[in-house]
Length: 377
Image (cartoon, rainbow, N blue to C red):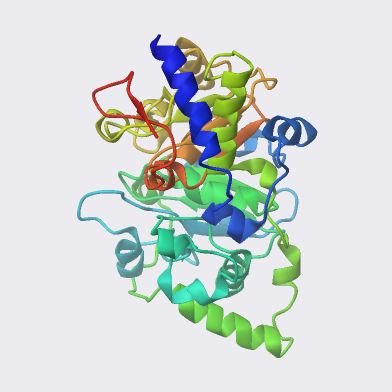
């Protein structure tokens, strides 16, 4: 009876959700209507999982050589970000220490929800919706890369400070922008220093996004920008993202086909807020913290495979689409990365708006806190 009511309510939701109003769609374009068809037709950007993590010693060697085995320039990016507490990654990077020549990628500032660059979002309304950390518009990403002197052909290595957890989000930014190669340094900056890695200790100021955009516009207008902008894609690969409409479509398609609500698997990486705040019906809870043995140290591939399979997810079965979500699109990228470490390379999407967007739409079905059988529309 409960499942029948859930199915009926989800079908009714579709009737009230005919319009397309997703901030993500308005920023990046409307995808094909059928999620399953689109997923079968495309795979996500290729990347060998063996190249994702590098040891501190490997990073030290690359730092000294300045290029990798393929001749790619080495660029270090500090991706430290904390979702709670008093620590601010940007401040710590500015104050030092830091890996010499490294830059700081601020997911709050380099974001489509930065109010100072909303004029660049010609079709976007992400700021009006007050969504957090949304992937930056392509022009802002290109401007940031020009400021950082990073080209698409470079080998980017993302590192973090002690206690970091969310480097996969920065890795994902470069991944979807089809960076030549992007890796994550295992451990943290303390491990780098313990291995006699050099550091800069002078204070500096990380440029703000609005300054990057102004400088980029001036360079672009005077044709002095080089080819950085042309090196990065002019449109994002939509086969890497899911919108709220597509998530809703998977629920509806499952109901009309009399299948499980999770015929397309919906994973949620949040911690305690999964139960405290509510979630999308049918979501499978896999806390981001369960993917790592300690902050910045990931579990082995075998342990990750067991973790997924223990909750009914087969990472290597690419015939079943998987959508990764969380609170605001950050820890969802940890799930995405963990699936790739398990050998998965297709049919995997990140719902960038995640619960932050889903919860703000009263027309969408939700499992209420402390009442798993109650779905509202």
